[in-house]
Length: 408
Image (cartoon, rainbow, N blue to C red; front, side, top):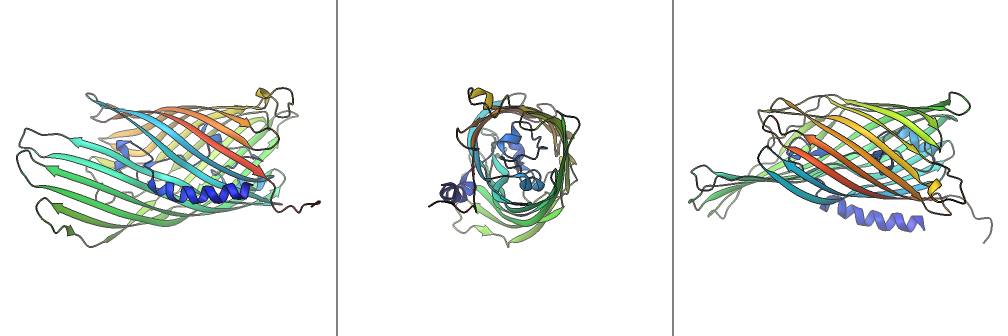
């Protein structure tokens, strides 16, 4: 059954991942867009804390986690989001529905493997500067698209509580931006369209270790490293003028974007399958994200940093009398410097998250629900502030593969 679900879902998301607009943030104008969280809903509900070697949930934050799986796991997730973008004088609202990930994890004795598809970043904005009634031009800017990744992971269990792993990622995507300029009373205007095709490879390595502190408490640790890599952007510019039937198409240009290295460190204490409280720290170096159509003198990039605290509580996962005792309750808090500086103001993303995992009776499968509320940016320094609310849903199906039936 799970194989049929995977096949049909893969066919669906292969189209959806390209067709969706995953953000409505004006900050997605810069770089490769608004970088989206790359983990599963279970970890996202804990603000990204993912330090436990989970046996029935996939953890894409650290490739070493696949060696802990006990059953083949397939998970898919999506989000419905609302946001309010405001400046000192204006305010606008938007909504969107997005595909978040499709992942498969396969246990293989001491080994574990995984593969999947995840949207990495999204571009989605509409900005208008209305100067109608004056001699100044009115301008409108629009952008859509983003970057996705397909990955393949392999992990190995060195010791019962110590795993190592790596994954290889192929990044691909398309970003299209349009700018329109017109002057009141003048019949002609211009439209400039820029299209960039993105592609490149990168690699992650990781390790996870846990040990007993005493009879009840365990220590969980996680370390993951992403190597710096290049992302090729093959770009083309088209300029159209009203009244001119022949648009100007420039020669394609190939630009190399620099994706920086990143290290993520996590630790926590708790009881496996009972409760956990942990923290996660992530640091990323300076990258080179400028393309010729989204550079600005008042914008530069800095080192990325994220600080998160979160955890879960599971009353009694073996309870037969109470379904609510088998529900996993999650919560977390995050503080991020997203690596973007506009008007000398470092853009920050601060948020809280809540979630719950509902087990499907008679199996290890589960349905997960999460809520995330946060604030990105600021209204000071002539910037905008984005207040967002995300409602997320995921399905995690577990089954045994490669086990020969004893009875026909």
